[in-house]
Image (cartoon, rainbow, N blue to C red; front, side, top):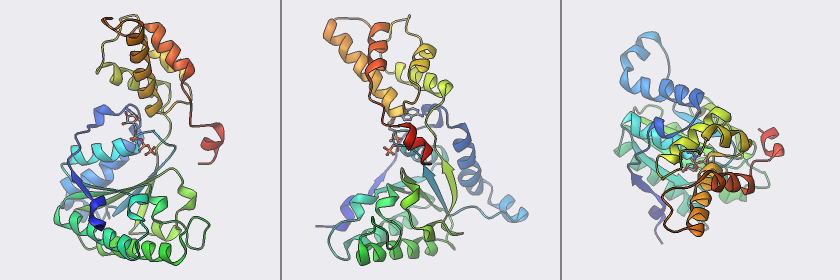
Length: 271
Ligand code: ATP
């Protein structure tokens, strides 16, 4: 089997406006990725070093992947995405080959973003429970080598994402590697209302449905859970009447009441 199968070159069409909340993260990414590409002379003149790599961390379903895609779309960057667990496969030497291939593609496609999702699977701390022993160490070393290799290259930015920042080897966070670290939080009430409204744009919703009210009811929900509430509400509306012109308030309220929340208090306190 080829190690290259896990490498995707795609053009995601996600815009900043598709993402509710996360204003701070959006602003930081514009400043550290878009600005250096658009205004390299200003960075040189003022002696500002743009980051080579950025780590996004936070609970699941809170838009890390969306943010990476929007950054690529809005910045006009090619997007090369891999998932840690898929690269970390069992064939000896295959993982290192896959990592080299990802960075080779990124250099060829510059300006580009390398998106390393679930990086904890690829770079667990050496000697930790999660590390795969010497295989894991070799995979980590080849990742570090590739990251250091892009230092002198312009136009390749590494974006990594994880739900578990605590298990990543700290060598990855040294200067010149993933040296900008951004927390992608669960949405606040305002952002939750925005996420409901973004979902409503894609469906027929009865006029009495109130996004603010639903935002109040969904304290602690991720964006992914809000999207699933909307799907559930639409399905139960269909169940009731296949010819219904729109999804009603009662369907949303019931779906919001019964949604399973993955982000517990303990999860949040862990960050
Ligand atoms: P994971 O850690 O599980 O990979 P993630 O943080 O990368 O999750 P995404 O994959 O970006 O999360 O989000 C999953 C889905 O949830 C999105 O495709 C979108 O439908 C919805 N979603 C999450 N956050 C938002 C948001 N802020 N605005 C709009 N939609 C959102």
